[in-house]
Structure formats: structure tokens, C-alpha cells
Image 1 (cartoon, helix red, strand yellow):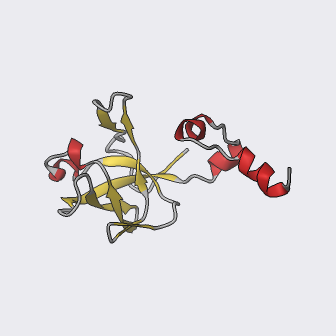
Image 2 (image 1 turned 90 degrees about the vertical axis):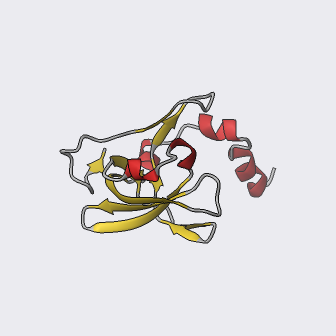
Length: 130
């Protein structure tokens, strides 16, 4: 088996394998999670599930695109909420909009119960979560 075959064999092949793959503590330390305060939220009309969020992280503001609109028919419900976001993902274009992070939420296996992981309002936006 050559090096490329070995490397491919070590990579998880299915979504289940990816979810069951253990990562090292050093890998986990690379993920930056911060408290973000949602300043605005609006539905992206040409998409079924996407919301465009403007989020404050301390002095920094970012646009984050999230597929959670089916759980928030009135996106204004999100304004003012403080929730955790992964902030060190590479920017990604989603339907022509740049997304600079990922909101953290919980969804059960039946996809029927959804919850944002809300942070106490006393915690300032931009606070690192560790």
C-alpha cells in the first residue's frame, strides 16, 4: 500500500464515521468559540432555510449565514440573543453571501426539537468559551 492509499484509508468515509472520529486535544484547542450577540437577522428570500445574521463579537462585527430559518419564522426573535459561535472557520460563500463563522445549536435525532445554546446576558459579547 503506497502513502496515498494509507492516507485515504485513515480518512473517515461516511458522515457517521466522521461524527464518530475522535480528535486530539490539540485539534480541539484550534477551535475558537466566542459569545456573539445577534444584532440583526433576516431571511434570505431565495433560500428556504437561510438567515443572514449580523453578529457582534466585542468590537468586531461579522456576517454569518445560518440554516435555521425554519425554526425562526420571525427572525427578529433572534435579535439581542447571545449565543456561542465558532469564529475561526475559513470564510465561506453560501448562495452568494459570505459567512464568517458558525452558530452553535442543538437538534435532536428526529430533527423535531431545536435549541440555540443561549448565554447569560451578563456575559459580554466576544468572550471566549473554553
